[in-house]
View 1: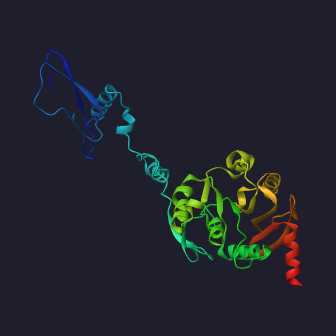
View 2: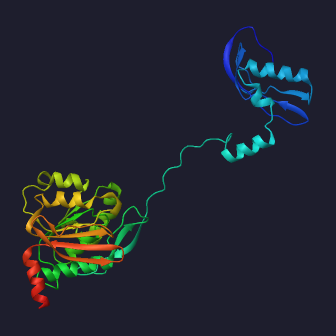
View 3: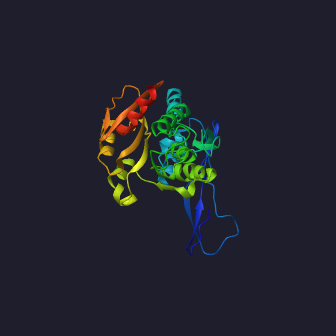
Length: 315
């Protein structure tokens, strides 16, 4: 390679290739071309060395050439053994490391529906997968039948305000508005569920204007209830449908019973898993029913007058 006497720097590069018998290689490294004027040939150069296998003199020259450019000769001159190649295939060593694959985009489908009231049979969005677990329709239907009977109006709910904790898809709160509730507060901490599932469900059913969405953890909402909802009266209905494995029911119900969200006439609907001990009361409210649906239990707490109505109806 010719070098002129008046130095002007331009970059060169070289690549490496090796063949088995008469082996040739070139270095895939940046070089510096020193010349006095701009040349017309391409700005990359290939340094090729040919040799016959087993020629120690050629091998030494190749080593020195590789070392001259700061490369480890062992990476180019030594061929891995069969066992080493097998190990490299298993561990993936030597393969190009790609950037971390992005998480798959979350998707929705329409498997839920409103069971009764003005929005009956309207389909609702729910996330695919197990990250959100809506209340089963058989459990939801039974809960509203019990509430309507306990309120003295089997055809619909007593008008009032509903608090849907761990709302997820919003199917419980939407069912409440469809059956006569005037306002529902939804508490859901997942922003994607709120924007891509809950809000579209409220808009498609026509209940968005009668709803308030709180994107916050349930525990924090209960602690800051007065700040978040003002000095409004307690809720008439509260539904508690948390992810089973992420909640201590004793702590949650104790926190809820002491809050200003619960009043003397409040009904609380709690969905909980098998082998979970639920107390017979929640503050001033008593347990008026506790039913099992497979591995799911449904407990409803309410005022004492609701229990009396239930007994009168049986007699």
